[in-house]
Amino acid sequence: MNQKKEVGEKAVEYVKDGMVVGLGTGSTVFFTISKLGELVKQGLSIKGIPTSIQTEQLANQLGIPLVSFTEINQIDIAIDGADEVSADLDLIKGGGGALLREKIIAKAAKTFIVVADSHKLVNKLGSFPLPVEVVPFGVEMTTKYILELGGAPKLRQKNGSPYLTDNGNYILDCHIQPIIHPEELERDLNMIPGIVDNGLFVGMADYIITMNEDKEIDIKIKKR
Ligand SMILES: O=C[C@H](O)[C@H](O)[C@H](O)COP(=O)(O)O
Image (tube, rainbow, N blue to C red; front, side, top):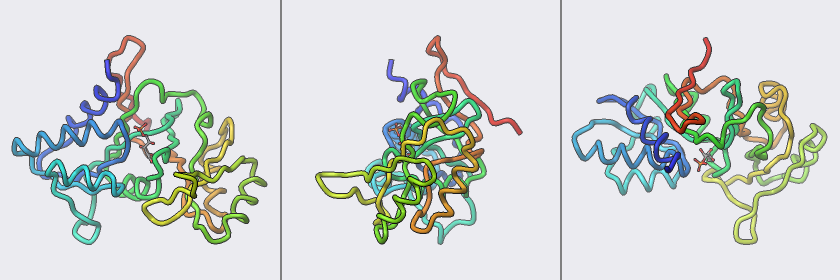
């Protein structure tokens, strides 16, 4: 069984005609977007707002109409993957480097749905190194300040050069294990000059679509 496909496709049940839909990035939400592409071909009328250039290209291939923030007032629903999901439904995201646009879109959405196979579920966040998006200027200083905060930052590489995000920034993957107070850490990191944002999504997910031990769909709902 392909868990990513199961949970990814389940999420389309939340998408209704006329909605503006935030389209996440990664190998799980790929299945959501592909299914939405099929439904659009069958007559579903939605507008997508992509969280990355990769997703924009995928949506274009599938014929999903896209909008930008200049054309809309709000996003009805955003659907995205995650690298880790804690027992409190907090997330680490950004394994694919798209965390900044993902956070902007998740924050703007009335409902934020996360699709995550059961391997992403953890008690406390932190086994997955936390992606932090930083501007290239002064990255040496930004790295030093993260070290002082207790993290172990490593500059992400691609083909022998620093990896560049869609926004032209670097990613520092930071081992900070375990993350006891994610809300504080998210805030403290974002106080450091040079950090644009980090991959902690605290209190943002409304629903987590995952699988239980019996390999059945399991939907976790945020406590209000
Ligand atoms: O930057 C990438 C995103 O945060 C992804 O949503 C996350 O890395 C999960 O991706 P995947 O579904 O491929 O594991």
